[in-house]
Figure 1: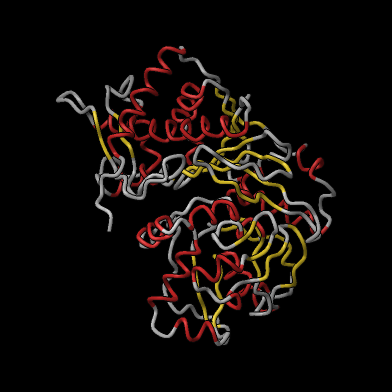
Figure 2: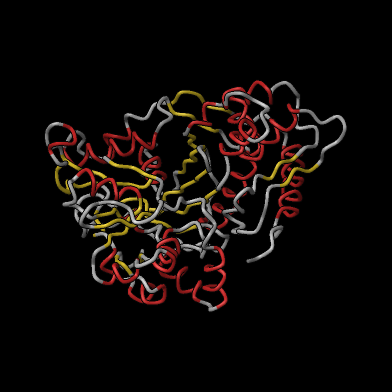
Length: 425
């Protein structure tokens, strides 16, 4: 089973498998001006209606268009059918299969800005508008099915390539969020909350994404859709404390540093280092620290950094509840930063709902394993997989409603200060 960061973009030669340009990572903002032009033309509404996505540099469609426009000879070679495009999953499947398989699954395809999530196919109108030849694109397959076998020289023997899913849908699957209304939040480099909406693609009016979670088995099977809120900087803000400021030597030390003070001391960090994702979608927002006094310490900054992750998650959850018309009873948490007990407790406090951390926190890899296991018969159904989920620790909210509201009101005030800071290109 393969899982990957969904939007990172690669174009490679079909004859050699070698990329023609460095991969463009999902956090790269180089196509923000291109997105501005699409919005000015009104084409963002077409993209939203067909793909469920806002028009933002986050997604891979504009990254692919940039490569075609800026790498010498790329467009001509693409039109001759010499090149292949894919997100990292498609590149891995190509390499693992010895170049026999050029495919991506529905969850990854739905993050390209090129895929019609209602008709479940590449959209010709969008391809024409972005000047992308369809011959570049991979076949779109289910998330759980035997596609082919690996080339024998990779692992010493051929084994089934049986699953492909983007990291966040895979984590949602690994968390056994199989029923509509179940939600998980992954605390990694960024923060990604997904809410299962079942067979219905629920449109968002609150700045969230409507995306494909997974499709099991046959191409004729109904997909499972999700509402998603994407926070670009979460654990990466802790890395900045380590690498940029030198306040800690190891990311794990942030919890002790943050716990050295009883509260944030009025300090708020908005980590808009690459703009802000959901629900703001402001590519020109920038990182902001507010509330500093002579009494502010490294501990306060560390605590403000952890709290910023929880506050951004509340931004997303409030939008999600408005869109879906439901109140969340509990949030399942995973990812590396979910091991931080101070963060998980503050998350429960600021949301006012229990946060549940599973025994296996690396649920992205677990989800890919479950999907592959379903395809080859290790498990027979999602009901069987759901029984495997185990709770490690549940964090219950202890904060008063007044304190919760006051902290969040100040956070929203700080966020407003960060918006539209950088000049548009």
